[in-house]
Length: 500
Image 1 (tube, rainbow, N blue to C red):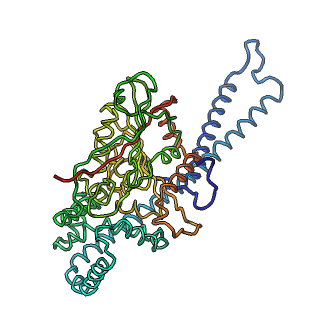
Image 2 (tube, rainbow, N blue to C red):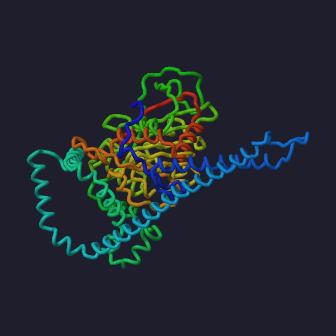
Image 3 (cartoon, rainbow, N blue to C red):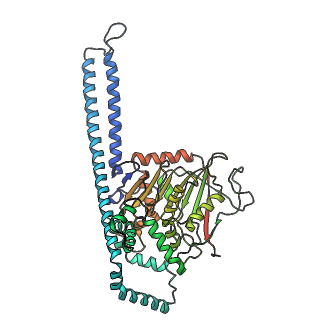
C-alpha cells in the first residue's frame, strides 16, 4: 500500500486522551499547535525589538536605529507583531476551548449513558425470572431448530466459524452503525449490573462496586463468570500452547549476537527496515488464518542494545470448542476475563524463544484480539514496554503504563472495540477514532467490514499524514527506539496442545 489515501468525510480523525481533556479532529489540534508556534515566534521577535529599542545609541553616539525613518519602522513592526501575537493567541484559545468543550460534553454523555445502562441492567437483572419465563417458548423453539438443522446438514454445533461469518455478513449494514456500536459498549459495561440485580444487590451498591465506582465488578468479572459457566460443558476451556518458528532454511546474515537463534536452529532472520509510522505498524500485523503465523517479531540494534517490535494478529477461529488454533473464541473471552489466554501465552513464549530479554525495549502492536494481547503485555510489567499501539482491539478495561506512549485506534463503526466496554483505567493513552463508512456504502461481502485489518492500515496511513503534535511525537519516539538501521524479522505460529 503506497501513497496517501484520498481525503473525504471518512478520513477525519478524532483524537482524544493522551493526558488531555481535548477531543477534536487532528486537523483542528494541529492548527491550534501551529497558532501557538506563531504566537511564540511573534512574542520572541517582540523581545528582540525591545532589546533594540533599549539601546539608545552606538558607541559613536549615533542612534541605533539608523536613519530618520528607522524608529517609525521599528514602531510599526512592533505594532504588527503585537497584532500577530494577540490574534494567534485568541484563535488558538478559541480552538482549544472548543476542543475542551466537546470533550466535556462527550464525557458527560458517556457518564449519562453508562449510568443509564447500569440502571437498566440492574432492573433487567431483577426482572430476569419473569423475562426468562416469557422467552422460554422462543428459546426452546430456537434450540430445537438448531438441533434439527445439525441433524439434517451433519454439521456439529462446534463448527461455528463459518456460521458466525455468514451471520455477520448477512447483517453487515446494521452491525456497522455507529449508534449500535455505542449501544453495545454500554450494554457490555452494564452486564455486571444485570448480574448484581439478579443477585438482589441494590442498584446504588452495584454502581458503587462497578465500573462507575470502585471497579471491583465490570466486564472482566462478568466475562470470567461466563467462562466459568461454560467450561464444565467442555466449552471455552483453555489448554497448554506451544509455538513454532515459520522462517525458511538457515542463512547467515552476519555475526551472531545475543538473543539470536543458534546457528544450527534451521531458521534464518529476514532483514527489514524499521517501521516509519502507524501505516507500517499496521501493515506488518499478520493477517491470521488457519496454519498461518499469528506473530511477527522484529529485532533492531546491536548485540548489547537490542530493541523489539512484536506484531500480533487477530482472531482466526470462532468456535467455542477449542481446536488447534489459539487465536480463537476461547482466547478472546479468556483475555477479556484476564485469565491468561492461549494467545497471550503463545506470544510470551515466542518472544522468549526469539531472544527478548527482560530489560530490552519492546513495542507491542496488535489488531483485534492481538490488540488486547498487546495491551496486556504492556500492562503486565513482565517486559520493558516503551510504547504500544493497538488497532481495533477491545482494550478499554486494560490500564496501560503511564510512562509508555500508547495509541489506541478505533473505528466508531467497528463493533469489536465496543466489546471491551467503557474505559475504566486512568492511563494516558491517546485514542484515535474514525468512521470508515461515514459517506461510503457498507460492503456486504465480508463480516464487520470496519474491523478489517486492511481498513485499519488505511487509517494508519492517514495518521502518518497528520500534523497532530502527539501523533508526530509518537512517530518520532518510535524512530528513537528502533533507530535507522535494518533489523531482523521472524514469524511465529502458536498451537494449542491437547489438554492432558
